[in-house]
Length: 108
Figure (cartoon, rainbow, N blue to C red):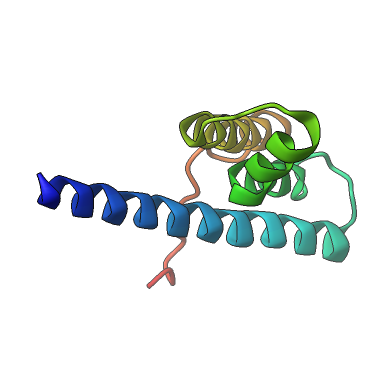
């Protein structure tokens, strides 16, 4: 029984780390792209930034503290993933690029 507690704590720690990594990578990356390239076209980092904000554990804490809305972590993850997928669809439709980025010779 004690082992299950350790596994649960390990799983929560991994989920917390992944959420912060996604928030920093996507959120800060999207913001930097917006600063560097400008706000248009709409695919220029907006989806990445909002995906990072949705995934950030701090977002759930702020919603709970100031708006009295408890958002489970799996819902935050699902929203962040849906925003990310919507961004890839927007890139494919509006910019006529592939949904999954292709390697052009010098990827590795």
